[in-house]
Image 1 (cartoon, rainbow, N blue to C red):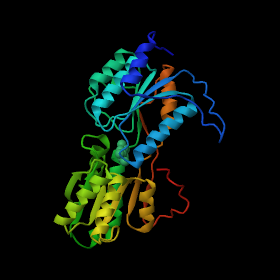
Image 2: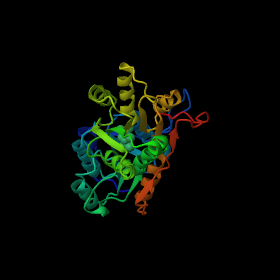
Image 3: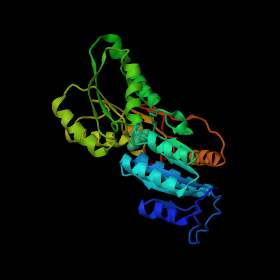
Image 4: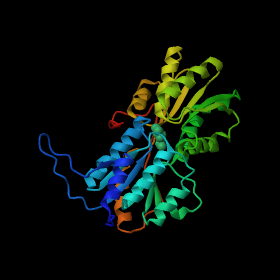
Length: 335
Ligand code: GYE
């Protein structure tokens, strides 16, 4: 593996830019010293966006645990929800001359220059979780993550089934409030797009309000508080992630509104708290968005480090959990 002739450059990159070098070592059995594993020499620079949701924290754990298990040295950077921090981190990975760079683009635009710098440094880049819009598609090797468009379509398809009797017996509008994710992010744009691709075919479904809760529980709560003050005619809430949904449930409880009965709720991620709410009947449909991509990312990083091509687009498997499903055999979610 290529490493810089100037170790001080690498020290600079790690120290000044706050990159957390997560060295590869296996978890020792209780009470024994961790035996540093023989790293196979691969150094992976990973830029994570932050810790905004249970989903994101699980995604980070999956990546860190998988790197340790694979003997890959991980330089892990948390951007604290700022794209400029991600760009700085990627530049530090380039200075450090890592073998591979992987990152979650917090928003879809604004990556062309820094990915050109990675290409000029001959460092392959793997895009994970969220997608990017870029002029030159050769600036990254491939994408692995979830299919946000499909998640939006699944949400809409659940509603068609849920309201089929009402659609058959009249044309009373079915009023939808949408709480979307981070503005400019691919999951927010694509979940909305996939949802509308289906819903817009049925005029009875009307999206009466849509606003971004930034994937945050606190913003979901605040938004729902103000929505409930100005709207008494809501039939459905379509929430782009479980974090915001938990905030929505808090706001509804305060006003004695029976979530899942008075208002139908569809949410995405499938974190444990949402599955528990589904079991209690407070949520009607939970669409899985799988955060546990760490092992696949490490396999792809190893291929890239060997100079091998990878698939341009890998969508991970996801399920839909609906009211009435038998969830008795569902494993604990781990997030
Ligand atoms: O739905 C949300 C997280 O990028 C798909 O980001 C991910 C989204 C996920 O904050 O919980």
